[in-house]
Image (cartoon, rainbow, N blue to C red):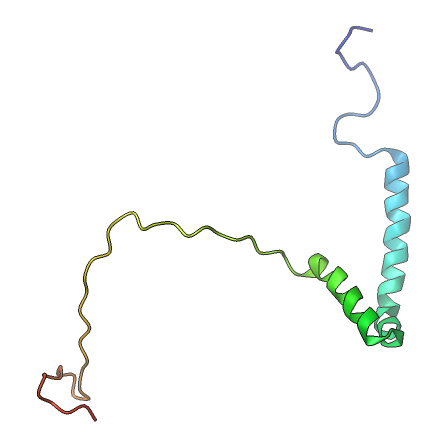
Length: 98
């Protein structure tokens, strides 16, 4: 056997037999418990129920990543706000605003 050269066994990325069987068994157990989870939650004390729900949340809701606030690439330009009357005409400085 040459050093550093793989000459047999599983190819990269292939699960081993034990892992595959264990995941299948655990998948069946979890699927059976999901049917009973609502009734099991009702049996817990409110504090225990809340703790369990908090632990389960990451599996249902994605965790939001914070995004840094960047400075604008271009300088902010001045802008003007015009308030329009009901007829679409702008108010002048002397017009009362209803």
